[in-house]
Image 1 (cartoon, helix red, strand yellow):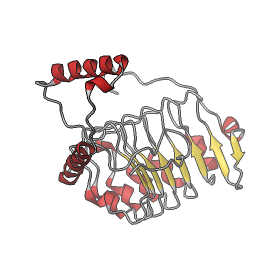
Image 2: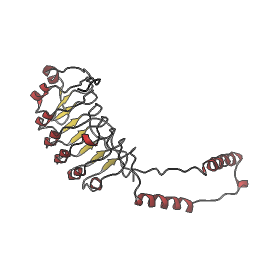
Image 3: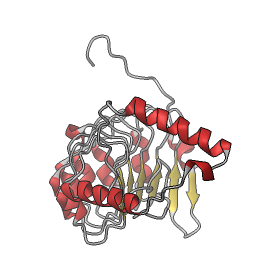
Image 4: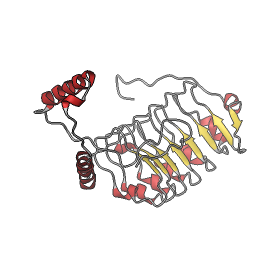
Amino acid sequence: MPKGKSSPKGKKITLKAAKNSIRITFDGRRRLDLSKMGIAVIPKCLLKLCDVEELDLSRNIIQKVPNWIQRFRNLRLLDLHSNQIEKLPESIGQLQNLLHLNVSNNKLTAKGVPMELCQLKNLRHLNFGLNAIDVLPTTIGALKELKEVGLFDNHLTTMPPCILKLPKLKKLNTKRNPILPTNEELEAEQQETIQRVANLYLVRKKNLCSLCVAECQAEKSKLNKLKNIAIPMVKKSLFTNMLTPNSIVKEIQVKD
C-alpha cells in the first residue's frame, strides 16, 4: 500500500451472514445479495457459496475484485456497480455462463478493462457507464451475443466500429462522452436544418397580437446577441436511453 493511501476498513462479512443473504429469484435462481453492506474487501469465505447463479456486490466500497472470482462458474449475473473498482481481473474471462455484467459507477480506466473480457461469449448485457474509460478494447467485438451496452458518462472520443457491428446489439448508450460527430451525422443535421427552413412561414407583423410581437422581438434580440458567438458542434448519440446503474439492465426504447 503506497504511503499516504489508506484502504477503507469496511464491514467484515462472515460465512453465516453470507448464507443468510442468499435469496431465491422469481425464476428459481440462487442470488447472493450483499449490496449496501459497507464491504471494502470481498471475503474469501464466499468461495463456500461459489455455486450461486447471481452475485450482487453493488453499492459498497470495494476497490479490488479478487482473481478467485473465476471459481463462480455458475454465475449468470455479476453486479458490481457503485463501488471504487479501478481494474477488473483477467480471470473474469473464465465466467463462461455470465449473461449480465454491471460495473457502472466505479473508477475504471482503459487499463482496467482486461482483454480477456472477450472470452465471455454468452454475455448479453454489459454496463460500463459512469467510469473514466477513454478507449475500449476492440476485442469486445467478439461478444456476438451482446444486446445492450452502456458506455454513458465516460471519456470516449471514438467508438470502435466493431461494437456498432455486433449482430444482436439493440441498445447502446454513449451519452455524455466527448465523441466527435461522424460525417454522416453532420450531413444528417445539415439536411434537417434545410428541411426546417423549407417549412418556414412568414407572417406580417400587423397580423400578430401584441404578446406575440413582444415574444418575437425578445427572441430576435437573443439571436442578435449570439450572432458572433461560435457555437461548438454537439454530437447526437447513435443510440440513446438505455442503461442506469441498477442491478439488472432495464429496457428502454431507443430513439431514432
